[in-house]
Length: 272
Length: 217
Image (cartoon, rainbow over all chains, first blue to last red; front, side, top):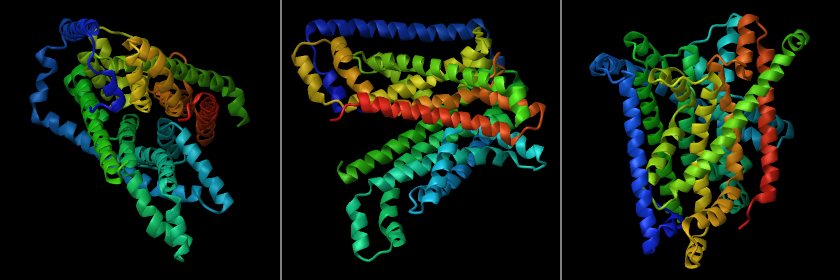
């Protein structure tokens, strides 16, 4: 990761004494890290977790196909919630900044309510309550509705900060050209807002992907649930959960990097 | 409604207490661990910095549920058996310390590089620079994101419902009530109101703290 100016100032050339201390610290931390690595591998070894019986099935294509299918389930849920929350977030934001007071109050209440409620609680709600009322909902929607509800509320606030970040002169200029308030939004403010909030929208996708893991609760076939099935088939807990966790970290890391790149590119463009 | 309160009123309060206990312990320890890791992350020792970077990227990107499942079900196979509630707390500490690290990094970058150059010109060593120049400014400039983090720790404490805790937290209690009898909407609504109010109170206290301690540059 690139260093900032502040960090760079910390690492300027040091004197001989400090250099010696840094050398010492470097050696100690390398030894400690190696010791940690060895301890972990040893732990795996003594508990028999390195036995081939726990790992051999990763060489089978159909196991990877099944993991891939889980990943597709995760992505399908994430894209569904992503699209819904992009639209619902915009709707809630318009309510939040509405000129009509009751609309504003309603939107604010909805946003605070959805933002403050755990997604997991909402998923249990979707899982248990419609069934009590005799309604049938597919597991896909049991995951997607709560996940997108939370994301919509968060995105509404993201959009709002984006609207606030558009220079006030832009709005005044539009109005003085005779645009109505709606036209002003459509042609002048929203296009600029979208450009400002894009990195934040992408970053929010990480949260959505994380939330889809709650599919585990309702057995929607995503990565965690498929991992459970593989574990049941091959009786191999540690390796499967390890691999699945690494997949999640890699996917989310890629999304965060993408968001960083977008925001960096934007800063360069606007000369910030 | 009346029956709900008379049958489950105390349990609701007790479970809410458990949720708060889990989140407070996790947040405070996460803050401490994150601060210590941040010091390591800006230390002049390259391997330590790299290791902490990997730690932060891992736990920032892992879903809490995946981490909790790993700690609860996979660690015993490696000979580490931990009670359920500590498992939930540990998973939240790991995640919140990574986010603390990230917030503090942003906070540190708002400090003018010249301050550090001046400190070094005065001959201050690394630990003095960190404890008396960097951390006070970094910590007071991240109050807002840390408040947001605290709220999301409270929300994430609901993952405690996935494991059989000795004393159930709020989300777990609600699902248990609903498995026994169809109380439906009301129980969920009550629990959700408690979560929302907690979040609003934390946000309110956070704004007061920020007014008091934030640095205006």
